[in-house]
Length: 196
Ligand SMILES: Cc1cc2nc3c(=O)[nH]c(=O)nc-3n(C[C@H](O)[C@H](O)[C@H](O)COP(=O)(O)O)c2cc1C
Image (cartoon, rainbow, N blue to C red; front, top):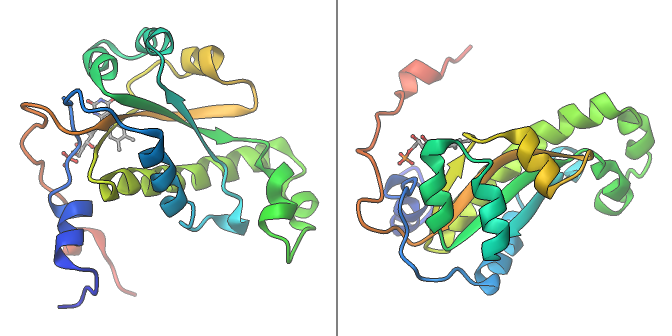
């Protein structure tokens, strides 16, 4: 009663959405990825800094290069998923700030002239955007399998550069047979929320 979002959408995004470990062969199209991005780009970030970058790993050759940097247990699903995305933080996001936050263009120099400040902000805000991305994948009727079991430096060198910090790899597709483990419990409201 307290939620205004349609109950079917609540189930699609959260209650019935699961982290998939296997996938069907059904392709994930560029049109679907474009639609997902065009939805989740509206998720908020500090100063609208939008530091998330997404590398879609489509070619079999690139997939092979990625799989070798995944932890052993993650390799089969990364090899089999119809599409895999490397999510990273752009530590030079401030170059776009005058465009992204036009009513306060001074923010670029006032807050983000030093690389450590940028790295901290990029990590927090790209992690937020990664969460929006996962929910966006679900909004497209697809399942996401986010993973941090990987060699981050290996992935950075193989696919990115010094200005980008890999956050996670996300397998994307329709869930296949035996796609998930039993649902793990969640913390209750009382365990998580304090009111002062
Ligand atoms: C940031 C992140 C990293 C994860 N890393 C891995 C991983 O390396 N390997 C794996 O099998 N699952 C990984 N998972 C999957 C989680 O274990 C899973 O999302 C969680 O248990 C909830 O499962 P559910 O969505 O099916 O309820 C990761 C999930 C997230 C969000």
